[in-house]
Length: 123
Image 1: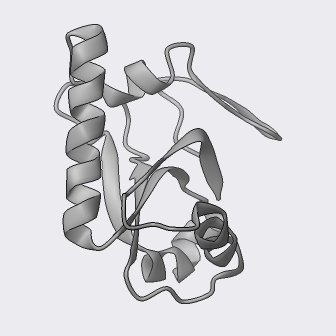
Image 2: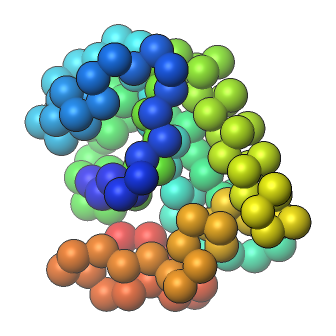
Image 3: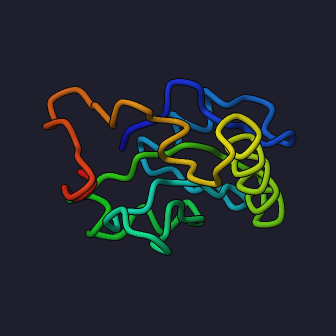
């Protein structure tokens, strides 16, 4: 899995590095939710972000297609509030609710993975 360099962290998360390490090794964390980029293509009306409970990351799909995690939160309500604040921040800076374009104005680049374009699936 990949983590955004300026990871959004909910106010209830006391040690983000510990949470990230636990996510990497697959250790259970009862209350942890992640906000990840949606693997859907960038089209008008397409999903931009997904809120997932950390246990979902243990599914085979996410082993083959690791998510790009933008934020971590303690509880679903906190995750929803974190997404709301991301969208508000994107709107305040760009006049648009396009979180992807705000966070990655030049596209997404990850180590060892091809540069992602609007038509490429998230890897």
